[in-house]
Amino acid sequence: MAQSLFQRLGEAIIQGEIPLGSKLSEPVLARQYGVSRGPLREALNRLQERRLVERMPRLGARVVTLSTDTFRQIYGVREALEGMAARGAALAMREDDLARLRDILARQEASIAATGDDAPNALGAMDQDFHVAIARAAGNALLDGLLCGELYQQLRLYRSQLRKVAGRGRRAVVEHRRILDAIADRDPDMAEWQMRRHVTASYAALAPLLDAVAAKNPSPAEELPE
Image (cartoon, rainbow, N blue to C red; front, side, top):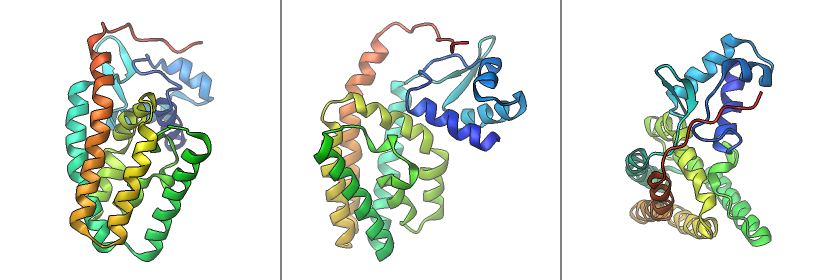
């Protein structure tokens, strides 16, 4: 139950259903999700480990807010690790993994062509995440654990904000195509370069939005409705 609740609450935060900065009342959440306090506390502890929830003295638990410092740090780490993953994938990716990566990209391209929807990759299921597919095919268990485990939810939180940047989804899919082509060509240098370029472009698209958020006065944490 704690695992299921951890996943449900994490998705609600990523999708924006629970607003950033919101206070997390255990009684309210227990009633809302129909669970006891024990599994709920375990789920909140796991969300805190994934840096989606923070606990403040005398204020209790709340959803994290966007931080320009955290953003710079995590995207610096992301560029290095995902560049390494793309390099590894170009060397190690099997044909069945490559076919699945092509399928994921084809779905993204079809969605953009049909609807013009700029919803970013981070809002989809993990098994349809272009970046996860590359990390898991790179042949490096430690790298997989970092990108798809320890850092994944926090990365998704920042990546999900790109839905607010007009046109970024369409450009990201073009960049995904270039990364896939380099991996399919078994060109590790080009694959790493294209991935680093992609992450840098995402950073450049999101930085002005986060700077604008940081410039505003912080608002009081919002209580979830009874």
